[in-house]
Length: 338
Image (cartoon, rainbow, N blue to C red; front, side):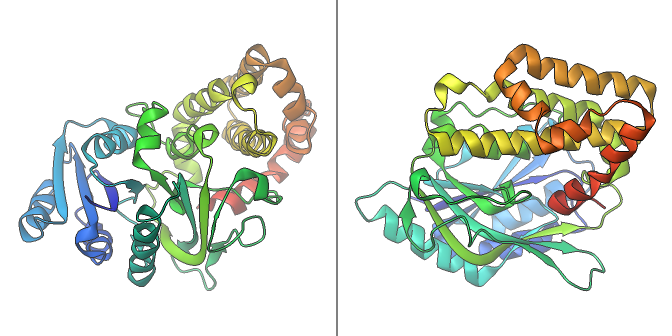
């Protein structure tokens, strides 16, 4: 039985995927690397097959018609045999020594009498040409080097969120919660980390940089111009996050508050991108988004609408939109936009 399955969604990734995969196979035979060739038209598929042939005990190549990042994550999950599951984008990479350390920790937990639902570690925004790299650390809100529950989680500061880069989920939990990411949609990593949270009872945090999140390609999904171009996909994800917010099914107050704060920042990102596009049509979409939230749950709507970010996102007129754009700096800092 594999300890950890790592899915690598790949679409025309021939130029950088080797660096990613090499960092994963360093975990040895306790790791299962699932390279998902998502309908690429370059040599991505050939490279995937090459690694599968060279490391048959570690690497599995999956070829599929293009379904987008979300469907590649879904395929990885369908093919995963490991007890734990992680997603690593093909232009990112892992610290090999920390990977070995995490495999050891997970192996010890598997051999014990406790069940671990979510493993959390730090990641670094590996921004091209940046003199200093921003590290996302969770040492303040989370206990370290032990299994803990939501009741032991302390306050997350604004802008400090558990993202896909920082999380490893128990594979069975993802399947039991019915995780199914939409096809042909970017930004589904928000769903990946958000939807399973009410099912998470136990966590473990390692205060070490594990994931290197590369930022710098012009076609990257977090490039602001690209985000505006794909705004309808951002809105699709945003609305799905709203749909997952069922107050009756989230009994733990700390999980609820965390999910509300996460939804708050996603609403902010969507609103800012719609405003910065400058298109009248997109200003209407911003209004429609907030109305969608209101129709789903008025209590959540008023909580976010009257909060610091929500109130600044909905100021009327051109001057109001100017203030809203100032909030862009918050979102940029959190998500590392180009």
